Image 1: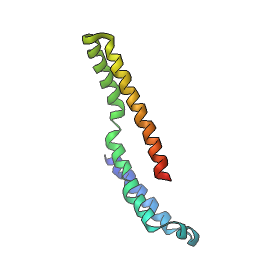
Image 2 (image 1 turned 180 degrees about the vertical axis):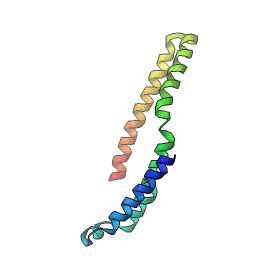
Image 3 (image 1 turned 60 degrees about the horizontal axis):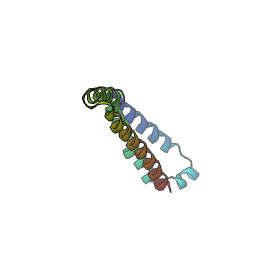
Image 4 (image 1 turned 135 degrees about the vertical axis):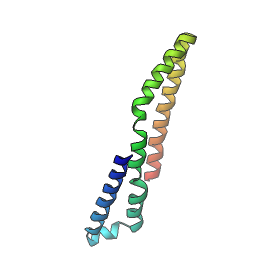
Length: 105
């Protein structure tokens, strides 16, 4: 968490310093709201990442253990559930990509 906070502070500092060096033409294109949005919402993603990064390692291990336990109980039918779970993950990624296109427009 400390590293995420440091990344957030460093990014906010870089955005602030860069905003002070913008030319008049760039200032006409960039609004104050855009800069405030970068400094408040987008930089907070570093904090979120630092708290959730451990799940990148833990989740596959827990899934493997759960699949093994369920396999010993019900057999190969547990792989059907695992396949459905993977399909939902792919569907969620697809929907996220579609929503990002809509947000960008």
